[in-house]
Image (tube, rainbow, N blue to C red; front, side, top):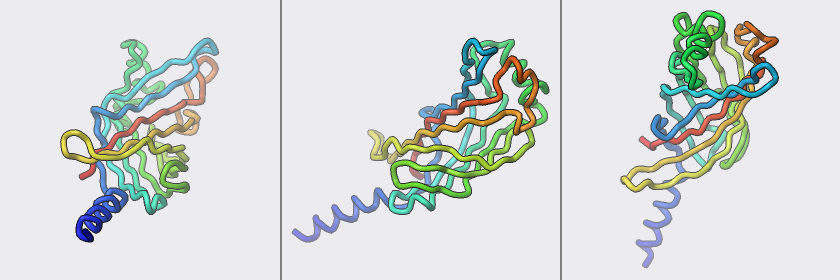
Length: 184
């Protein structure tokens, strides 16, 4: 009787131990929204990115995250606009092909908190705070183990040297991340 109980306890506690995850690009979305002339918001996404994170529900303050985004994968569903946003007027993706985030601290609990880190975009690195909510974790149908988090942040694009057309295009960029990771 005792052996099954010990095995069950080991399995349950194993799911909450520190684990490394690779971000699953097929089940992760990185969106952004920006005001367009005060009339509406333009919504876009980045289609190519990679990253990983470490997470332990028992020690959430030890969480670590690293994400690299291919800036040229920007997609607003409008080819001419995408070309302009990728140009030297805005992201200048030829000069700055990657956007990266590397966490430095986490303050919160196992379900939500603030992830602080260094965001590098357009050749400028700034410390930012990302609001994070845990969606869930568990076994998947293929024998693996996954976890998922949502994150939100609002950036001022001018802080990163992207200050063209500030009158017609908003300075605030709202970013939403829907991250799913596969445990290594």
